[in-house]
Structures are given as C-alpha cells and as structure tokens.
Amino acid sequence: MKVTIVLALIISFMLLATPNAQTRSSTNATLAIGSAAPEFELKDLSGQPRALKSYRGKLTVVTFISARCPISNAYKERVKALAEDYSKQGVAFLGINASADEPIDEVRAHAEQNQFKFTILKDEGNVVADAYAAERTPKVYVIDAEGVLRYQGRIDSSHNPRLVKRQDLRAALDELLAGKPVSVGSTQAMGCILQRTQDLAQSKTAKPAVTKPVATKPAAGKPAAAKPAAKPATPVAAGPKVPLLKPAAFGALIKQSQGKVLVINFWATWCGPCVAEFPELVKIDLAYRDKGVRMVGITADDLEDLKTKVIPFLREQKAEYENFLQDTDDPQQMVDVVMKDWPGVLPATFVYDKTGKLVWHRFGIIDRDALTAEIEKALK
Image (tube, rainbow, N blue to C red; front, top):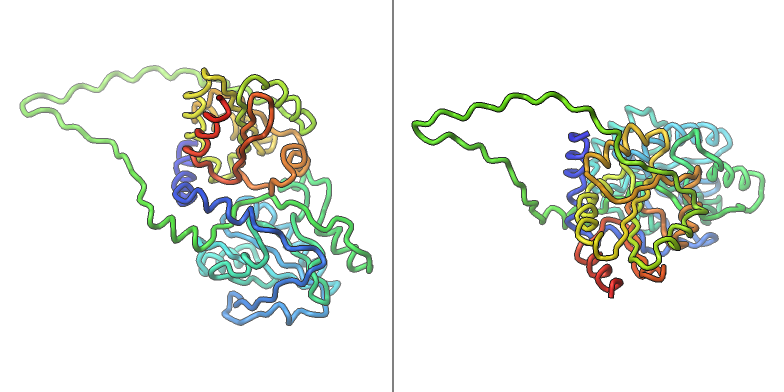
C-alpha cells in the first residue's frame, strides 16, 4: 500500500503544481445535442491522416480514451465489444487519445496489447479534446450520418460491469439505427481528468521539494549505537469504519451538520489526484475539527474494495474524520442530489456554511489556501 500511495503521489504531482488547471476542462460548456460536431483531422497510429468528414454517411462513435486511466481501462473490453457488435451494422468507431502525458509509442503499445481493432488517433496538443469539451476519459460522442451530435457522455452507468444498470451508448445507437431520436442525449461521464498539454507544460516548471532522510555517522572514536531489538509485531487494527451512504441520505447528512461548517470531499483510491490531495485534507481536519468544522469524505470505490483498498488507505493516511462509501450502482444519482452542475470529476470538494447552504465548491485538486479561506469565512 505504501508503494502504491507514493507512486500515485509522484504521478499526480503535476496536478498539485497547477491547481487551477484541474477545473479548466470541467468548466467548459458542453456541446449542444443537435449541433454540428466539430470537424477534425488526426493521424492514426500508423501515421495516416483520418478526417471526421470521411465518415459522413454513417453513424460514428468518438471515444476519448487513455492508456493509463484505470477507469478508461476498466471499459476497454466493453468498448471492444461495442465496436465489434455495431461495426457489423455500419457504425464507425474512433478512439482518440488526447492525454499529453501519454506519448504515441505508449498509446500504440497499449492498443496492440489490448488488440484494439478500431481506429486509434493521437490528438497532439489536445486540439480536438478542446473542441469537444472533453474533460475526462472515457467519454463518448455519437455523430449521425449528417455530422450532427446526437449523444455525449458515459458509456454506461458503472465502471464495474457487474453493477451496470443502463447501457447508455448501446441505447443511443439502437435508437438511432431504428430511426428514432435518442431518448437520453447527454449524461455525465465519470473518469480521469484528461491531462492537457498546457497543464503538463506548467507542471514541468514546478520543482517539488523533496526531503530525503539524512544518514548520520557516529562521531569519530565512538562506536555506532547498537540497533534496538526488534519489537514483536503487533496485530493490525481492523481500521476505520466506513458506512454506506445512499444518495437519498445525502440531504440528511447536510441537515445533521447544521451549526457547523461542513466540508465534503468526494474521492476514490483509484483516483490519482484524490490520493495526492488526501494528506492536505487530513491536515485541514486536524487544524479545524475543534473550531466548529466537520470534515466528511465520500469514496466512489466499489463495495468489494472496501476492506482491501479503502480501509487500508484510510489507515495509512491516518484519516480520523468520517468517511462513507457511496451506496449506488449509478454515480449519476449522487451527482444529481449533490449539485446538478457537477460534471462527475474526482476529486470534488464542497463547503457548506452553518445553515447548510453550499457556499463553495471545487472540481479537481483543492487549493489549500482557497479552501481554508472559505472555511474561515464560513466560520464567521
């Protein structure tokens, strides 16, 4: 677990170095259903140019994917199955990798390893991602034969295939192939924040302060101190309790906290930025818990990972504030009760004043100074 956390912190440092960058894509206006899909031309993995207009006359599915994002990879078999099933009905599938931190060689190796048979394009400079307001992976767009956008959002309702309740992409394609309008044209895609070129460039200018342990030598003429005898191993504690929280109970959580400033952070162990910011939240909790602030964490991890991932992580982080595991097979249900404009980005942090009114929110990694300033303001 220690190695996993350290690696996640290193990978996610670029996100910490540019906190404002994390919310840029999530605040972009989404494309309007029924509008013309932005045209583009990108090179495939063999270097051949592919233009969107060349697929005019057939349904086209554009999917923004990633070689590294665990959520995108959780969908790779489903995307392969969708492409295989619907290509037989004349539907074209295009995968676009716009992640600035994933070089073309890595994208090519990922495609070969997973035996992707649909076309993969590399969006250098995330030009197409910007045009489509694609903010995370995976996210899909369905374009009709005339080049009009008919669906955008998630592939289905859960990255865990056993928990899927609605197959949104399949439903949209089936309706369009039957000559019907898409009944649900937009949904929130849940996944990893897409690393953009400008954010990566900014992060490279930041130099992290690395504290290394100092090896001390014994003074001249003095023998090195003997190492203390190893203590017998102590039993591992059961860990913190993480009760389940249904979306319908979210309002009650807010009500129960009235009289205190409430800070709610949505996170997951598979979310690199969430892992990176977690130590700061632990520090903020310690600084404000006795000043009238209630810190609450809500993880989007699967129930099956509660004992093996969530609880060990909380124990490792020494998190003493309350944490819940959201109890829903469809994360959109939680989004709907928390904030309609929340695009599903993790981490997401919300601050409520003493009356239970939402006074501040942030999608992406927190800015510690901004968060503490809002807490101080709400305390007054």
